[in-house]
Length: 207
Image 1 (spheres, helix red, strand yellow):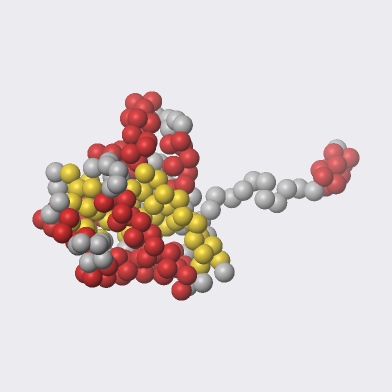
Image 2: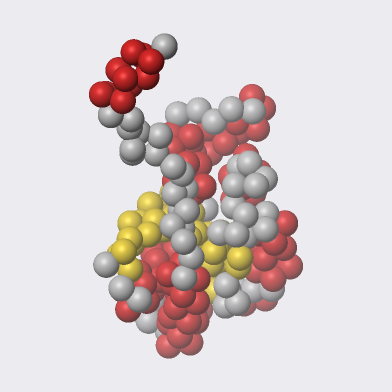
């Protein structure tokens, strides 16, 4: 069984957060679908709520500090990304946008991405298409066809609404298909294949 890395970015501000809940359900659906492809997945969840101050500092200094550097590396070295934001004023939240603003503009090129959003009413669902999808299109990521929006009424009494569950499963399956068919994109480890010590000595003797 091969393995892939999946990064999950959740921009919810409260605890518990419906945005985190949607991110978790999308992650479960993607992991289950990857399992059917014979792919094991390592999951890294980044809650932007905990990086709010570091993101503001990064915007004014140009350098990521503290745990933000780790979060950025987890996203840019992943084989797939789930990105979920609450919808504020008909668009993604400022915290969500700040995170993707501090990434290198080429760092997500070709990366499979599943986009999701939460909001109080279904009226804001098109924010996925007029705000999130264009943003990841600008970053040249590959966004899966099914985007998932969850309004308050979608969660139902126990969070098992059939329509929402169907969209989650379909989106997770689409992301899993892209990840499974994509070569592993991890950064090369410079210490993975070291030159044997004997060869290094031989080179010195040849001088």
